Length: 532
Ligand SMILES: [Zn+2]
Image 1 (cartoon, protein in one colour):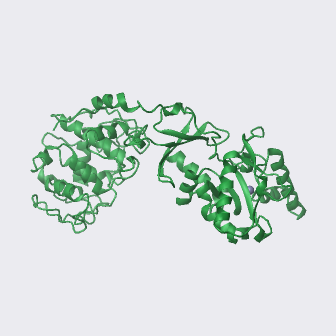
Image 2 (cartoon, rainbow, N blue to C red):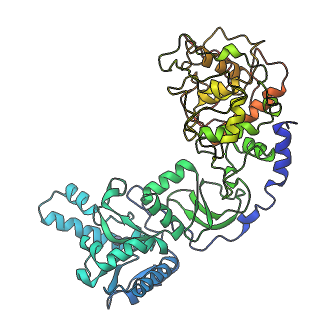
Image 3 (tube, rainbow, N blue to C red):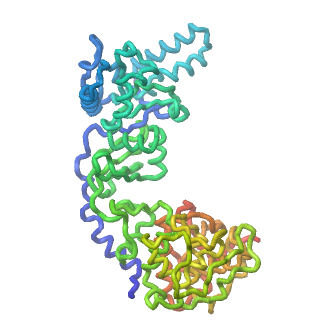
């Protein structure tokens, strides 16, 4: 089978990948910052006022004028209408909505003053007051996205027992469907620094609200997760896909799909939350990912599939079952001929006499059984991985992978693949004839005492298939992400095309960084960072 050089493939791919990605030019939804985070760490300046305020006084008691931002107001109307339809008898009133900077300051001052009257010192009074009424600039009531709701059952007071009323219970259960979250709960006080407020509802949009509910996240945690992951993908409540991106600065970059909203993440920053309806582009969640080139090359070669929702989940760990499945699709002679693998040095995979203490020396797998079926008792013939596993087993590739396992008699298909396991399996494809092991230990965490692994890692590093963190660590016990394994597969195919295995320098790879986040440098064993 012909193996395409990855770079050639990329040129072809890049030429048509972004043709339909001009959706950014479309007008994003109005009132864009429904997911904005406002709290003591992220205050709003006095001059920032919400646009599109709308009266919701008809839901408030007489003479109480309450305003919300239009999107929040419409959602509130729908939610309160549904509450009535659901047969909840409790009369519901809204207590407060939008407050300006000055009003918020007055409320806070009044609260501080009441604690002062009780005899507390100024500093303590301020701290205590802030648990209930935030100082000017720190309250999300200033965004017009927050509303306090109460009922006749608790005399329209804003108290904890609201949560136990019929209306309170219904609202807590259903608010996310209308885009509201219960913003301050006792369980999340460490993140919000605000005491439980079961009456305070915050509009964030239903996609986001449902996601936060399902993953038990408060708004602070949701932002933190977005910043960490950069993108979240989920199916929203009405069954459509959602891609939520966190972006800083330039948001005019091409993004796939239809932009539903662009939200300012924090009022003081140039960070954005972009909510999109992703297009039917396969592997849409790999766009912009460091592993995109590798993943797309494998996809184009029909060696990997995404998930049915069109995603690839590049950051998710690879299970052993997924690994052998991907592996078995590689265009390797060892599978085409269904024979003994390409020059496997058989003695290489007998268990080492002496191993590093962290590894077991057991190896009870029968490596003679080349033509047989995989003997592992924990595998299921009806599962997707069974045929691929059989193929890999017959090629004597699975057995070396399990050499250091505590239980090498089991395959554990759902277990996350470790770097050492992938390395051992891939090294089994290589000839060791012309291979001269390094005189120097390339990685602090791969001991020459673990002879088989040491040799495998040495060989794969020299051929540029595996890389360490550039600082002398290989992380043999670390899980591999789907993006990492894609990069490794491409480099493996590339290396196998070279007839002569390099004995000096590994070819320089174009990869920017591995999942470790550390810059990847030349990992040749002779490099100067090696100490012993
Ligand atoms: Zn409130």
